[in-house]
Image 1 (tube, rainbow, N blue to C red):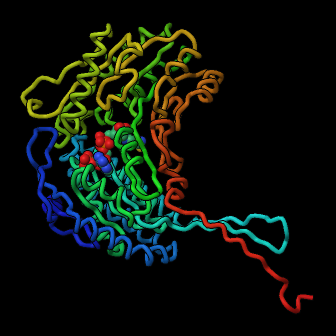
Image 2: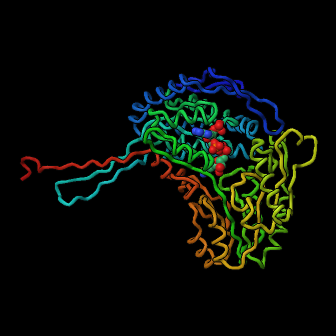
Length: 488
Ligand code: TAP
């Protein structure tokens, strides 16, 4: 699969060799070069935008059931090739194959979900002050979408935009992260296989500051759907040269509150999963944990044991490993920086704290799952997004203190609670200032409910019906009717 995608871009229905300078793509488990991408050149960017513009009218004009059939076909094509697509993702991103396969299957599910939603694009009829007038609200696709995506979920984060946009009747140009381009190109190949008309889906590779920025500034792009860091999101918002719709799904710094009534074993299991899965490189990863003081010691002891029990390996040769390497040197460096800062300010390292030892880890970006106790809010680990396999823990005495600490952040993406008391759940659920609050579970996002952040975590929603309506304009059509001649 990789050979067919190496150095290619997808423009106007054809995967073709990119004309720009090539840059290498590496396997994060061992540093070996697996392929290369070409930086899309201005003429290629123009060609992709022109193709998407030309395809927009006919695609939007198709009956919704036809667009739905294409999306179902895409879901089937992706599921059919889930194994090679998963291996490709592991090769460029590092997550173990079983986890990557799960992500590919969720992408297939997303295609089917939005295929169904496409057939339910309803409008509204609104009463007027007089009976001769009627107001109808129509939903119309926005146009050409520029989708800019990060590397941590190379399939799903493309898929949420692709499927929502196509269901609505938009066309799209995808700019994946430089370090994980091949999963996006493979999705592009599946769009061709599924018979999606040429120009509807295009994929351009290259650095965000060049290719992504060109899409942001292009007057022929009607909407930017961006997932990535708050820093780049803010830059994009400021740098658009024409008014255009924007959805910005940005960083998080997600807290977990464990109360005295919590099922401690369940809380530990949830904390270990959501702190360390995908090496903590998840926007909704648990970064920091606040535990009721009476159960604090028991919780940190058990969490350290759970962290130590996780297996770390090359996810290609060991598909069932709990953790692979981190995706690149950058998040690994930040993880070490946050660890050093916490330790210098008095935190205790209870698990991890270093790379695993062994020849097989020498050339990869591996780091052991790390639990740091007795943390305070003067430490980076409690106030900044780490995006690595490390979690800070601190005790609290009252629920109101837990809420204050949990909300003490510019971010507002997801938060978690483990508690058995309904009163505690209600109290925390109402006060946590986050777009997603998961209680007694750590899966804050499901495909049929809206998923989005507030504050510096962004604007807009993906998932659910809302994830398709983001790609639509509303039109108010107000008509005055006369009684027909001969009505009596
Ligand atoms: P970023 O560095 O922000 O990069 C995201 C994307 O933006 C990449 O494709 C990047 O391209 C591109 N980009 C960079 N500069 C750009 C510019 N000037 N104009 C247009 N595009 C530009 O984020 P990342 O390190 O890849 O991803 C991690 C971040 O994403 C974390 O903060 C995480 O929380 C966030 N995230 C959020 C969510 C949700 S749903 N809220 C989900 C996943 C991740 P290149 O990298 O190729 O240069």
